[in-house]
Image (cartoon, rainbow, N blue to C red; front, side, top):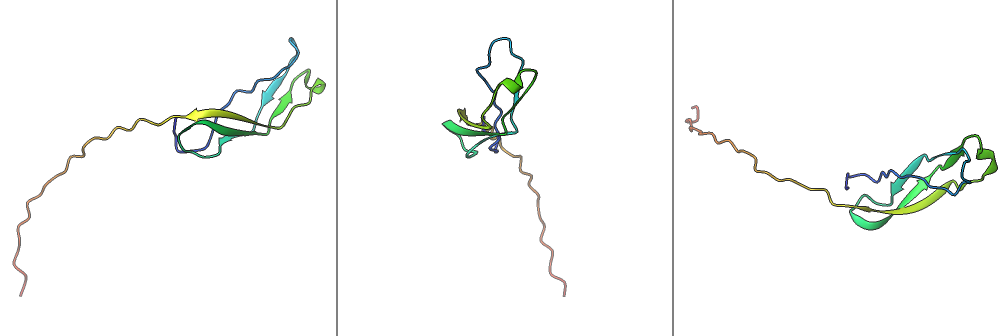
Amino acid sequence: MYDGTTSATITLADNRIAGDSLATSYTSASFASKNVGTAKTINVNGISIAGTDAANYTANTTATAAADITARSLSVTRHRASTRSMTARPAPR
């Protein structure tokens, strides 16, 4: 949903051997622009792996993904305006 930023949150997936102990992380993920759209590119940077079996793998440090930014609902209401009666005073002489 549109939030006015390019920040993105992603979930990393991998093809590790079943039973291997790995943790994946990334430092940043961001859309190219903050505007609403479909299949918008997300750039993921700082991908790293850790864990008991991490030394058995090499991992890419960047990736791309795609996601939609949907429009945010906007609620518009009237603002109560106050009125005030003004009395004119004669200008001082």
